[in-house]
Image (cartoon, rainbow, N blue to C red; front, side):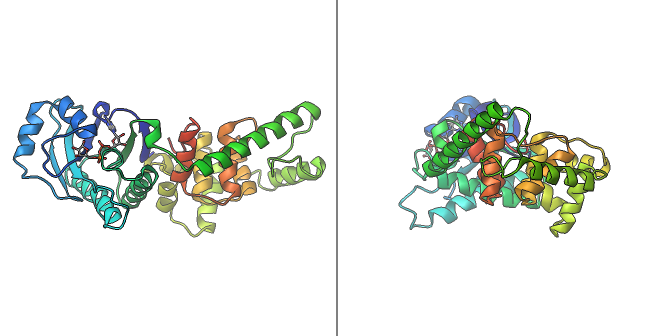
Length: 327
Ligand code: APR
């Protein structure tokens, strides 16, 4: 939950502060800068005039005026010049300086547009990656709800190759699920390499013995055991899972707590569990991964590839219009 990707107009977001992708004059412009000034009203420009501009990578704060937020944090992103003129360092410092200003002003929630990814021409995928990276680093040591506001789908593009690979995998699994469903109505196959497993009986035995073996362990107990086994702290785990502290302490304090499926999967990803371990953890909460569910297939795709970056997975889920992990 601490990082939410939303598709919206940032001037509509109700939070403590929104970030403006401004220019060094701070006197307004087009894109998100223009939209924020229009929505905030002329008092915003009046206050900006007193700030004396802003250097690339720096950030300055004003009131929000007619916007549904207390503050506007103005930051100036780099103009993309091919990537050899410190553009990445400057963009990183936009996020760092904006987040530290938000913290200084005790903001509990802040919304970012994808800085520099419009008029300033920063490649959108790299701009998003830097945003995700810097925000998740900040959230490892700070409590704040951060929105990444995507204004239009094409400003949020994961690589075409990744989309094609996932699409191919989904098609494969859908076919397998429908083929298996039709021809072997009574046998349930565990999720595997999108192929019916060698012998349903052996896999049934595996599942059965696993279940009997650890039937007395609840979801919460297994989660805590896995955190210890992985040598993680509780906060490292729930932050990596993009789950907020309050929800984690509920799970921790109630051995019979039943999380949502996306929460259970988010923990499996944070713990970098194998597919079998993921299935076991889900089973504790009463869930299973299914090949007739696109969300589950995408999760399985990443676990099989041992790709456990929850923000990359959320980018893919967002691309396929699925619910995001940790939300
Ligand atoms: N809400 C959220 N995001 C928006 C909105 C909006 N209302 N309008 C645009 N965006 C998105 C764009 O799609 C882009 O992904 O914000 C991102 C940043 O685009 P720009 O606003 O063009 O900002 P940037 O690329 O940093 O260029 C800054 O543009 O507007 C001028 O004065 C500004 O000179 C400065 C330059």
